Length: 225
Image 1 (spheres, rainbow, N blue to C red):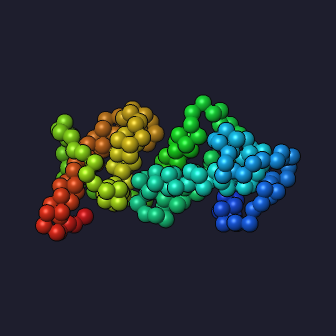
Image 2 (cartoon, one colour):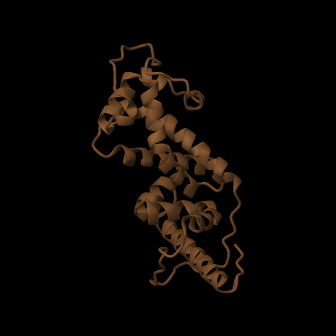
Image 3 (cartoon, rainbow, N blue to C red):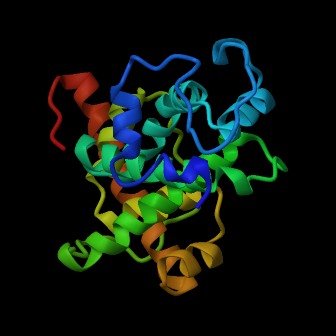
């Protein structure tokens, strides 16, 4: 086990983030660490080097640099803030364990985002057998008509996405936001490509209906989720 991965077990990440007393000398002891500049002024490559060298301060800084954006990703896949925090925790444990294998062939943020999505998928698989889903009265397909999301606030859209049934929420996020194909989603979620398409269509219908009710609310002051 590498010095870096040894620092981040099931509770290691929480311990790191909760402790605000780290100094530049507080590092993993199993390997020598060269002096580094403050992580606040390090570029991405230098920050990665510092993390791999064992600097706890750099590891904390990496988390702080990306955790806000990644929490937003996790919130879209989770139904509650508590669930999103669990996904974020699991995702960053995976990030630090696998950081030595990051080849820097893509932006670090993109790589971390993929890890968060995979953590959300694992949570979905764990929870799926416990969730009963009503199919509802929604058509199998939706006409080619498009609806824009540009006129709606982040909190409004997040609430509507979180209200989707878990499998609809997963498919909608993976296809509409992450850019996966339905074939790829089928493989990730262990469903058929056709099922992915159908569930995405149903998710769109639900969201479209909610957006229409929200528009009505803006005009007459009433809205129900």
